[in-house]
Length: 387
Image (cartoon, rainbow, N blue to C red; front, side, top):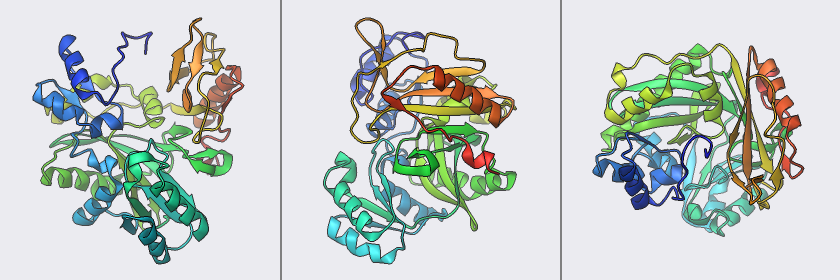
């Protein structure tokens, strides 16, 4: 980011300071990335200051910031999703496990940076996960627990824009949530993506649009919180059609990276159209025929405790054709070196004529990066390649 523009030390949740900064620089448009800024009401504050903003209001953003709210919202508006129970304490949550079959899905209700979900293979593991959530493992996000039916199928990420009245599909991808190869290990914020994803057949996209996307936008508007921004629909393709896994009120990381590499249209007019209620004027976006792959490099220990500050080398060399490295959590050392944060640090991305070429380019770039304290999955895109 520092190579593209001026960086100011303002946190995503410092709403008053962000509004003041937008006024100081006479911002034409503010684009909200982090979900914590949406929950904190940044879009609402910018609206009061008459500053155009691409990002959902705090009320609309509850589709991400509260899983309990979203499940009840699905009930009210007949969106297909898994069976669930919301529990206020550990005892009732453990008792409610009898209503479900293994594997058990245990979720912290609030925002937990993509890490508040545990898929427990047996009851004892589920009870331990419940104790972790209520014991503060996810901070304030764990005030309630949502238990869910485990959905069988293939997962995918669908994106749609809305200006409060008009909506438009805006691409799709497939993420890899588990930390290790073979979809093993704990859930993370995402260890890699690819786009397009073969799971999204024309039929599945149409079903998702009519059963999930448009009813969600209509429903949240009917509840007094018209949605302006991007809605990330994580869905499971089941034998009964697409079912909602969860909503995100943002493009998502690392999904956004592969979408932007494939998007041939200028993104800014779409963001501005959402902010200003003019999405109906926009043509359908143009997408490259190329495939894109993203491989996440994270600090050893992630998504658990990890040590920040290790040096990442090799980023100043030519990493190969079609390669772009996005920084997720890095900083400059005193000597100008690149230092990793205590989690996901780099998104190593590449495009190619097909998935195999894009994947080979991305992993070729990973091999050139010198970071002994980092790790990555080696099987990004395995579902598509196995077809």
